[in-house]
Image (cartoon, rainbow, N blue to C red; front, side, top):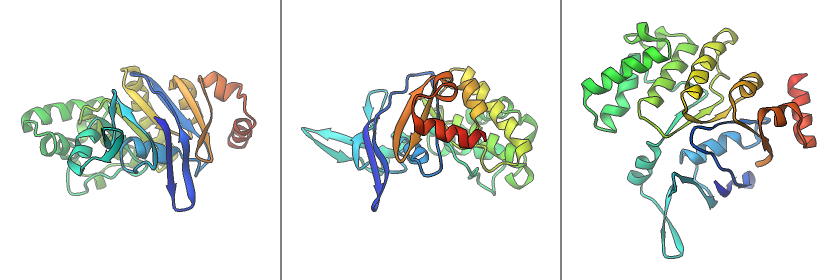
Length: 248
């Protein structure tokens, strides 16, 4: 990300954010509500267009193409192609209510990527097993707990074979007793080498899993570093104030 800015009317959601994420890294974003964390993820997934700046994934400019010294917006087809390189898991599960867990996971690979149904089904069953839901493949979302639905959503995102996984507070809509089962899946995914950008209020998870923690406030990156640096010995007064409020 290079000097990325986004405004919603007079509200400046992102103020010139620049950031590098290396392959295999896990970045956790922390900060108060309204600090720009979710908007940042949504720009990476091209759900929110940038007003200024540029985002590159594996060297490819996202959402635009350069012609001479001018940038032109990509069409929906090209944006959809680029978006397949990122998987996003939202606060709400957004599963298809009329489809089983297995059908939710196979829908994208078959309909969007045109993969063979038998191949997609085999991979979906493997993914459901990886998230601990091998016995729930035939269940509909209404028959699953919130934690189980979120794990299906993670499997669905992984089924598209993304280069980068984006998590937007994936445990915030869960009952407390279901949070651990989703975080456990995310920890295993991090250990497997998946590149991950995670917006979270679970500071314990960030301490354990993140390679870097980014504290955001008012649409800007205030502080970035290792979990020990940002969460254990923050340099900036705004970071210290946030942590004091959260931990208290």
